[in-house]
Image 1 (cartoon, rainbow, N blue to C red):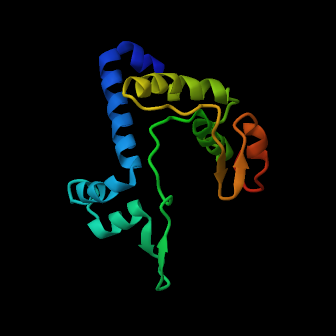
Image 2: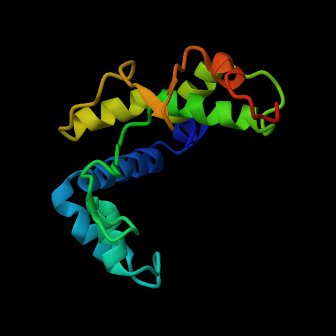
Length: 161
């Protein structure tokens, strides 16, 4: 969704945003994960074994070496559209040559992710939005600073850009 869509379709935008926040807040709760696995397993959705999805969503799974791993934080659902993630996604697009021109990462992130709208809607729903400036991102052990996206891209030996 973008600011343009939100402006041209305010009721649809609010309803869609609310449903996304509601669904992700529900999925964030560990006690709902088995129910979600059952709901998304059928052929008309993911067409995957319920047991496998339950293992993914609950964080208790076979490690492929005969052991069982337990990691309650293996997967999570976050209703907040972190601008830092948008910037990280764009750095990868730039790194692999999908973005050719220079881009104002922060501007695009704020115009597309609409974190302010999400925070407002979360408050209306009785949820507490996070501090949008307080998000640390580490991808495969490498810290990401959204304020320095070009430095992050340059830090990779392998890239197309």
